[in-house]
Image 1 (cartoon, rainbow, N blue to C red):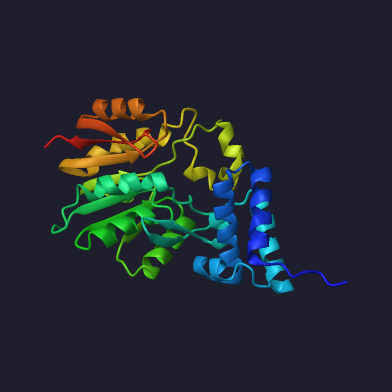
Image 2 (spheres, rainbow, N blue to C red; image 1 turned 90 degrees about the horizontal axis):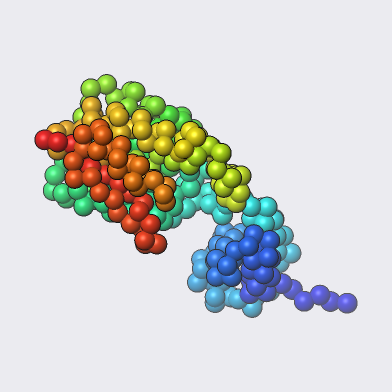
Length: 287
């Protein structure tokens, strides 16, 4: 008895149903995951999947897809399976040593770029750079800027340096616990997406977060520990009139704003992400 060969369309449909049922994803998100896995498994483009949706697959191709699907069904993030994630229109390498770049962090980049005139050699510091996606994007979008990025994790910095090499951009990377290795250096702009989840938050044990570095996510009992440290130390490393911009949790805008005001920052305000959630708060150091 002959068995009909699997096709891309059939395997993607089946995977979509399994991802929806097992991980509780919306069907649209589950189908996107299935298509990303298929393209990665067979080393083809998304357009190929459409043009060849009814082609017969070999047993090896089906097995490769099944192995990757099993990893995703266990909860492993797509970005870890493919070792890449798109951010601001570019592909960045990722690993379990770094936080996976999130779309909402593009707001922080947009706000930073608005404060970086294209024709000026603005000095910028990216705190807790992880994969380097923020620092590298700023350096690529503003070639005259001088961008420095720090992280306390040597493993994360190795990923960031690799991304800078792949994208052919110059960024200064330093291993540092926030400002510790910067001495008396000052910057026109400081940005950061620090850990801001409460250590006991149950979400840390669910979904994709289980596979990401805890040190890049959790920050003390209330999630504000690192934000407090950054805000307390930023004034000593900003030029007069310089700006500090920080991404934070969905319910932390008021607390972060109060910390900035208490530290002497002016023009303190927050900005919402595409979901309307206050996601970035910043202020300006008095001239």
